[in-house]
Length: 399
Image 1: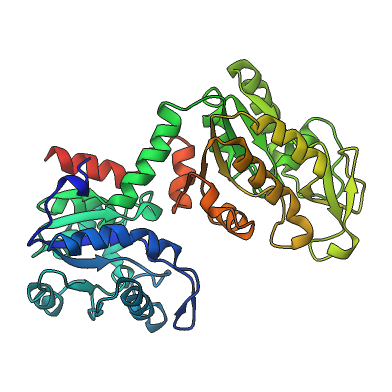
Image 2: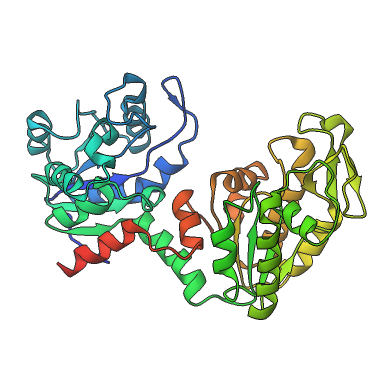
């Protein structure tokens, strides 16, 4: 790939694909993490004498113009962060938009309206996506990808625009994501520990299989651990269990032993009759769950066991909370693991919206080496899949 740091943006009109699919409360951005992460790239282009044309999507308008998915609130928020005017074009392609781009001077910014107002952006037809991408990059000198969060999507602005543009490169955020994630797996400092949590084994099956043999230790928590515990013959009461995946869980544990990866499961839980029944939360010291109760968090003994595994780790990659952390009664396990990762002193990488939320809720965000901005992209990377957004940049560099 080419990188923005190696390209002179002076006098260039630059199309930057960012991931500003952020939560809104009416017209107010409630979490601007993704916007802030793109600022170094935008400021570099403006300081270099380039003009920045920003494109992104918001929500799922599915090819229709829907006012509730307009990027107007996002443009206003970005203007406040950058300290410059960020006008919003009425569309992302068309003669009016190209006229606005042509009139841009060095140091100026223009945000294009929601890409997904056009069906071609997410079309399954590659030729249709390419035609849209050519419209998108017309009149621009450089394409910069800084949207790791959509790098797993075969969208026109992600996979075709780099090939249609005169030149394409990765922005600072995209470069950072690649450096940390690729570095963690290509040359990790060992012991290498992966932590996988969340609700379902089915959503993480590919990840678990891909990690075997690559990591030295695999910690499994959250509701997905229930399936593994039941596969070991331990009663899990009314806990969420994917019974159809019991054989898969046994297969993974057997394969891990052959691959030299040590799997660590919870040894105790915090129990309740339901997620809302926090007042009646009780510990399970045996690791078994009685009928009528559910495992909703890993218990204190489990946190101690996981902390011992993490102690002295060289690299830690974490995706998925240890329990139903949204309820404070079931958050101690996730927060305890977060603290143990920080205490380990390892290179620590976190990805996934729920896991990010745990880290920030514990006020430990600045203590982690890197917090990925990707949800689906991060998961697919952990599965060992090639991300279309990265491949497009690599192919563009060969043109």
